Figure (cartoon, rainbow, N blue to C red):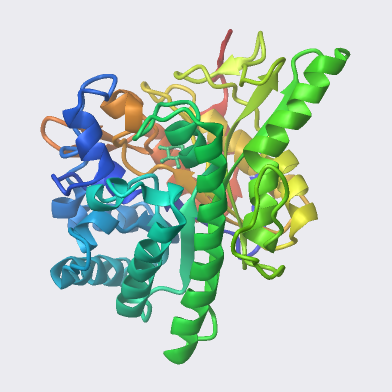
Length: 428
Ligand code: BGC
């Protein structure tokens, strides 16, 4: 039952500023809470209070032997109003990054993760081409100020999830339901990614750095027809795959815009990612144009199917579009009682260890239980438990297992017996 990870393979966790920092910072999620739209009523101004507790949290990462950390910076804090930059906030992030590096943890910085400053949102955010310069200016400011400390960047997190949840399914702010807006946002995010990609490289080159790695965190799902013999289900699966993740992947990684995306920017075709960032959680089983879940499948607490084979499937597909080192920039599961997370970890990392693809890093989602967007505090994905009343962190058994995997560069038979053996998933 043991396995070894490849030489040089690095492990750590991922987070997003809005989900952990807390504070009333004038972003779209503070606003969503005040509109009463977080399902369990929890307040992102609480979250993990990480903006205040960052030193303790970084120390805990060190204690847990993390080698890498994906973290986000909060645009609304850095630019609290149009044309305003708060350098104290940038200094705060310098301090946080320096703290990680002192512990030997390599930072990967995310520039956009689902959250906008309200002043940008009120202008129509990424639906309008004339707004994009605001984001690019923010990227320039942040990378100029922090770029000497950070080699690795994610421009945009999950453009497809952000665009569809916000503009197609009407769930994330601003909860619109328009295909036209959805595809405009996807096109504009692709443009922002490509321009940021070039800009980050330029800024870093001017500072004398040649080891810059820039990519985006691509949310990929394994997509299968509910009934593989049914031609309608097969066609739907192909359509969902293309509209949700195919078209945007070509646009972001290669500057190739294909229908339903158009390219108002006359983008030069090229290669716009130094690594393939994959956020992988689950499989979609499709019979029409919406997402479904396979019957009689293992489920997590949010009823998502647990399907470890899908990770290598999506990585194979992506490598066929652009071949790059693979960073699993998110993978994890909602398991409120930490009863099956260790098995989930074991199966996904084992799949990576057996693959011939160039997997180089694994960022588990997430480090500490955090504010899970619409689900608020009630969906726990962390390796570390958070008591939101006291902000007390407690390492879970799966967190202990994760550290042991780092120390042993894989899983030994003893570890399997102690952490994995006997764990059953809930089947539904
Ligand atoms: C997002 C995270 C989120 C996680 C679990 C991803 O889609 O990037 O912010 O917490 O999934 O739902």
